[in-house]
Amino acid sequence: MFEQLMDLVKQHSGDAIENNPDVPNEQNEAVTQAAGSSIMDSLKKFASGDGMSQLTNLFHAQNSGQDVSDHPVTQTVSSDLVSNLMNKFGLNSDKASGIANSLVPNIMSKLGGGSGGFDLQGMLSGLGGGALDRNHDGKVDMGDIKGLFGR
Image 1 (spheres, rainbow, N blue to C red):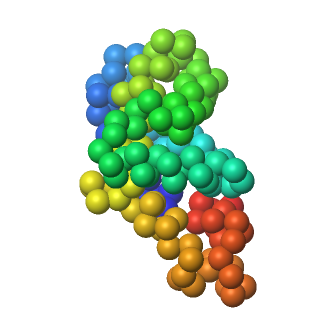
Image 2 (cartoon, rainbow, N blue to C red):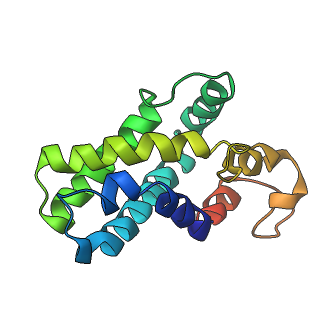
């Protein structure tokens, strides 16, 4: 799943990272990798514990045609990315926010499936069936959800 997310980040990193004068060309790949890791880590946090309902809400909003850029999940993922870019690359808040605001809403809008992204929603909605019994214990629970995200 991480590889799929990284592909999605690379597809949408053009203006946010590669064509951004605030990111030196020699750091493009590192910033892209950090962005993908940050987004994945944020999604892992939502998938474990009480955040799952917020993820589901994001997908419902997305599927009903709503703009997800102001959704709390998107805002949290963006905020996490801003912090990571500031810490890892020394970008100031405005520059890091510009990257996150350009990249994250595009990525989040693709996570629900069917629009050129990958079908995270489909994976999560299938939890009632045995196909997602990641640890093969005969039931689908939080351990299986964490397994989807590599934990």
